[in-house]
Amino acid sequence: MGRARYSPGMVLDVLSRAVRDLRLGGQHVLIAVSGGVDSTVLLEGMHRVASAEGLKLSVAHINHGLRGEESDGDERFVSLRAAEMGLRFSSARVDPRSLREGGTKRARPTLQEAARTCRYRALETIAEEHAADCIATAHTLDDQAETVLMRLLRGASPSALGGIPERSREGGVVRPLLAASRAEIEAFARSEGLDWREDSSNASDAYTRNRLRRHWIPGLAEEFNPQLLRAVARLAESQRRDSEWIDELVELKAGELWGIKDHDDAEGRMSGRGLELVEEGWAELPEALALRLAARAMRELGAGRDISRVHLVRLWRFLAAENLYTGAELELPGGLRLIKARGVFRMGRVEVDAKGSC
Picture: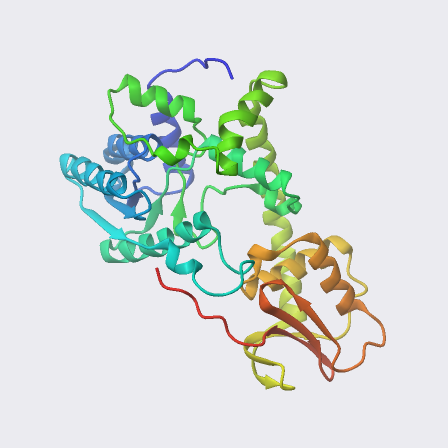
């Protein structure tokens, strides 16, 4: 992708600007550090700008236990670096494999998805223990491009092409390095003489993201656009801003069309928490709004991982169908069912799924 012009101050400028844009001044930020180059630079950079920006910092490391002694070495490395900086440090050990036990193959998360779920649960617990205002992760411009391209290749909805936001929907996770490329981050680390840990799994082509990172993105950049990463990031930024505006409309309409209900063995086929949807008005909705509402309903019931356009269209057509008889039923991914009851629709599960423990 060519050698970009670089100065050590670029990464610090990105972080300072992000701290201001995210309004982190005066807050306690828990830095999530794996030990890799991205999170090592995040920790170093945030430590350097902390005084000027009025930040209080502490450090967390999550040991997934997937690489044996290598994983334990990562934890020791991060612990030592935090101690050198005089920062409070906490670590947690999690077992992502526990989330993949039982259930159907389709319902089980991938190992990477399970690891992410366990990691964020553990980080949230540590953040509470530290009384931190937010958690900072080391997502980069490269991560943004990889995420958008993977979703595009898999046929994601337009809103999914918004990629990784600077701040999570709930507000508890921030990503101050999102505007810095990995090349810039590695150049900063080398120029400043930083040590970091290499995750051996990153060199494996067994994972789709690794193949995209190691082969496809460099090839696309060389053949079509040396500024590919920033071009994809601009697309994500534009799509995300549009989606934020559209989501407000979806939120308002959702409040008109459904509410949360406890289905107590409704008609013998559904129990637990679910949605009760109005009977009328679905056929008149514009398709773009209807499909976003369908996606929101599935996410609200925990089936976001299984969403595809085919399922959303089926859901909308079922709701919009004329003369649908009471008792008609539509099966959806994630164990969900949509049932036509008297005067309403009910959406939920036959049984409430138990969440595995990390």
